[in-house]
Amino acid sequence: MFPFKYPVPQTDPPLSPRETLPTMYDLKSEDPEEPGLPDEFHDWQAQLLSLTFRPPHYPPQQVFCASDMNLYYDVRHPGWYKRPDWFGVVGVPRLYEQVDMRLSYVVWQEGVNPYVVVELLSPGTEKEDLGETEAEMRPVESRDVAGNGQAIEPQVEHKPPRKWQVYERILRIPYYVVFSRYTNQLRVFTLAGGHYQELELQEWRVWIPELHLGLGLWQGEFQGIERLWLRWYDAQGNWILTEAEQERQRAEAAEAQLQSLLERLRESGIDPDTLLGG
Image 1: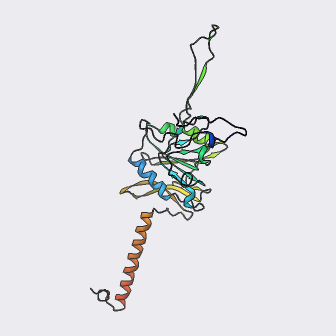
Image 2: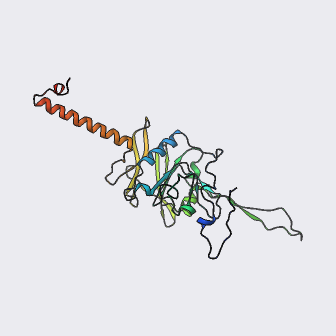
């Protein structure tokens, strides 16, 4: 599967997983046959989250976020991955090794787990996203018989755990967010005692003190579509603006200043059209 031989033979002293396990260049970054591929809403919603995810205590070059990207999480099973609809990481270089755009996010190479994950519910993935199914690790009984006539001991077939178990028990991601565009229901879970506990939301908002950011539901237009969207807000409760919104706001402010100046000129008996050569 991998272009290099894994695992790499150990040495004394032993090498770290970063040196012995596959990198993002070795692991697959997409699977066209995987169920639950994103629809148009998944694309736009993830984009808005990324455009407004600006933790104030981290410089932009120490913040990474991604959508629909393979997240490799288990050093014992380096081929296992989950594909969150959106996740954010702080304290990690914006570029892999500070030079390359990521193909996947490989935790044993990065050394930093995501701090928040967002899953956008769809009918086909809702039960898994909400942890309503159990991890599949079933004993598989063998019907073979050993050479001495005794039955071979049953073996256990290990399958990847579900998203909930990965986020809660393996990666221990502090905040797990789920949102359904079908019901407009927002649910936020945080780790408490090693397990996810659902938070009580105030006006469909949640404040994340460690990031100095909040996440909530905003009614507005994005990419020409008016609806409820998930987006980040600051300590003053203001929605964080995208660059396009900031530019539009600056243009509107400049236009307002110009109109105010023209009005003051008229009140002083000066015709602005004359000054402008009109």
